[in-house]
Length: 454
Image 1: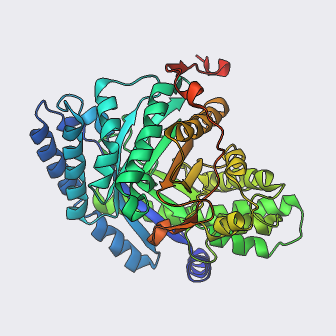
Image 2: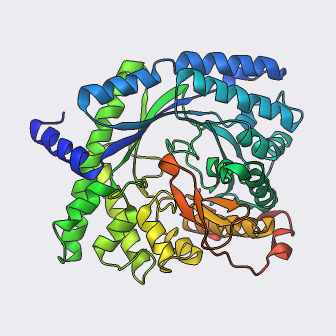
């Protein structure tokens, strides 16, 4: 139970430091919706989602009012649709029909996003996987709330370079189809290596095949709380710094645990995991980059940034696992550019480049996230960026991901406006030397030697 002192402390974190529950996400298995007729599949999907999640938004709102804890998003994740549609989809348009059904269901129950328009292709693509990937640009351009992800590699299997090549092309196509909306379709598409089955954060959430019928997972975020706590120990040693981060992460996770248990009980759905991720927003004082500056670097990207981020990520996880037995997902620190004002400032100051961000992804929770790049960037270059990030994840046995937005008609230094939690992003310089011959080889990069464990 949370005692009265913790209640008072939590209220201060909410009022002064932007603490919030970023999302309550209901995972729903759609495996029983499979059928050889696509219209039947769509009907089953719509009926199941609208029945299972009919009280999700209201429950979140009730908990928010009763406890005074902001719950920013209510979301749904579903079984990777390449699996659900495999028996009925004969062309990309069939998958697009399913995407539009998912969007309709999401609107009906009132959630902010629905994730799971996904394929898992770390070792190879089935016909259904390829059709779904082919359909992604049009599916995301013709829907509002649907998010997509593709897992192209893992430590156990290596990297499917055929999928990496195809996705470079599809990212370009998605950007073009939504060029009048600053390439918003690409903001709803994540390419993973080592994707977790239980991630509640969009755009990469899906309900993994190892999960049960349905599950409630909660994502908590509090970069402002950590920043405020570190201000009180400014100039002190690393031992004090680490202890402060751990204690703060513990308190933040306790808030998530309370919300998760309440939501699980009220909805009659098993509790899954708490994802304790320092996920920033464009709001002032809600920035991971500001934490790194408080730790001691002038700007995110300065020498020492990777070490500071490694320390932050590790201490956040250590604090979180003491507060809940079920910490999972992508817990740690996110470093999206467009969603973090401190990161934007660092880019504009010339302190932060894509190459430095890539180095930082070796030690953070995910990868190259919400980065606007010039619209003229080639598909093979985008594939090369995906391959580099997947290699980092594969070799280091961690989750990595790429969410880049080619901004049509924009050049380095221009700004792209997404609005809301997605914020705005400066267009970043991309290495212009080519990698076509590498990307066009085809096949699979083998798993690393340390993957052979039994």
